[in-house]
Length: 257
Image 1 (cartoon, rainbow, N blue to C red):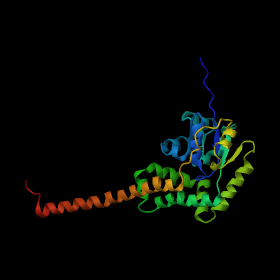
Image 2: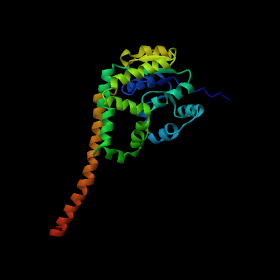
Image 3: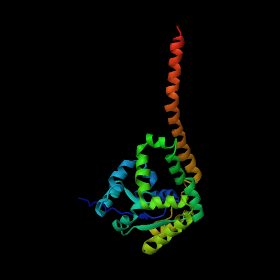
């Protein structure tokens, strides 16, 4: 009987959101024999990820089992970053990947994307979207915003201290992660640093470039605003239209054919 191939986890992302994490995920999906966890993947089945991993205080063996079960061989971005310390213990041979960018640009990107979407869903009519998709509320408001790292990230950006927070995070990771495990990476560097760290050949295709602030604004914010106002239209106008139709009926009756 053939022995089962040992599961290997390759990359532990410790960079903050909006540091090229989706482009990095796309690159790792090309390079590695499995999926890279990212918020994009988590939103495909939020309840499963929350119930089996993020809401639980699980031991390292169960932690490894979760990633093997769903064929995750890497992880970047939130919510994965909130578990990076356990991932470092559970997967001691994995590369620790600190994605970085120019701090002022990171602050602008955060303000135009994640901070904006939190504000939108905290006010009318944006919170109606969460009524329609309650699993998003569980992830964003019930879980992420109750986690210290994520909450501090948002608060620092909103309070004008984003650059300082970003630089402190980078310095903390450099000081606490062993240098032989750490790769500090900017997506503008392309394939070479990533492939060198993973000891993999450089693909022929260009390095992915996805999810800039304009894409986020169009595909996420605009879509959710449209749906939120659509709910308002349905809830408010539908009874009005029905009421007006009934008034016409009682006033003049249905036309006879």
